[in-house]
Amino acid sequence: MPFVATADPLPLGVACWHALVLGVVQGLTEFLPISSTAHLKVVPEVLGWGDPGVAFTAVIQLGSIAAVLAYFRHDLQQVFNGIGRACRHGQWSDPSARLGVAIVLGTVPILLAGVALKRWLPDYESSGLRSMASIGVVSIVMALLLALAELVGSRRRELEQVEARDGILVGLAQALALVPGVSRSGSTLTASLFDGWQRPAAARFSFLLGIPAITLAGLVELKAAFASEVNGGPIPTLVGVLSAALVSWAAIAWLLRFLQQHTTWIFVLYRLVFGVTILIWFRHLGVAAT
Image (cartoon, rainbow, N blue to C red; front, side, top):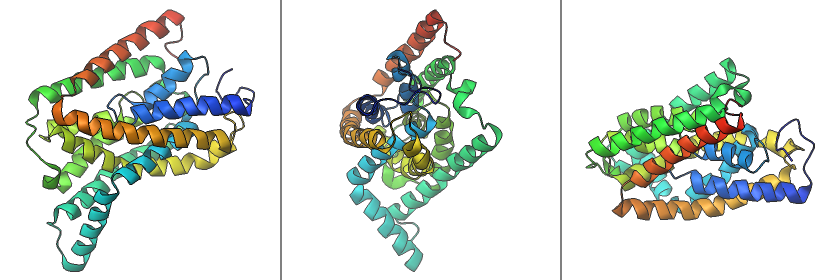
C-alpha cells in the first residue's frame, strides 16, 4: 500500500512497521556519508510503500539528533562553557568558543537556503530534485567529489584548530544537502577533507554542525507529521523517531572508530554502486523521473 498523501490511511500496525524500518534506515544513513534522504526515498519505493514525504522524513531525523546530543553531551557542554567564558571575559580564542562560533555560522547557509527553497519552490516535495534520476546522478557526483577530497586533502588539522571560516565553508557544503542524494554528512565531510581536516575531526564537526539545522527542520514539520492520517499519526512517527535514535547512536560510534584507521573509499564505492543501480533499476521500471 503506498505511503503517499493520496493513499488511504495505513492500519496502525502496518504504519508502525513502516516507521520502524524507516527509522532504522534513517539511523544507519544519517551520519554515514551516503545520504539519508536518498535512502528514505529509495527504500520505501523499492518495498512498494511509496514516498513517506518530506514531513515524516524530517521528523524522524529528530531521533538522530537525540543520539548526537546524548553521544556528544560532554563536547556540547564544553562548547557552551567556552562561549560563556568568551562572552564574560572576551576569550574568543578558546577552542570551545571558536567551535561554537563555527557551528552558528555554519548553520546560517542551510537556513537561508531552506527558506529560499520554500519560497521559490513550493512544490519541492514533488519536484525533479527529489526524483530517482536526480538522486542517482547526485549520488555519483558526490562520490567522485569525496574521492577527490581523499586524494588531495592534507589531513593535518584537528578539531581544536577550527576557525570561523571553517564554519562558513562547511556550512555552505551542508546547504547542498537540501538536494536528496547529496548527503549532509557526505557534503560536510568532503568539504572538511578538502580543507585539510583529519577524518575523525571532520566527522565530529559534521555531527555537531548538523544539530541546529536538523533540529529546526524536524520541529517545523512535527505538526504535519503528527497530523498525517496516511502515515498513521503520532504513534508510528514516535516509533520511527525512537528506532532512528537507537540506530543513530550505534552508527555514530561505529563511524568514529572506523575513521580512526580507515579511509572513506568504501563510501565512495557504495555511492557509485548506489547511484548507478538507481539509474538502471528505475529506468528499467520506467519511473526514473518520478
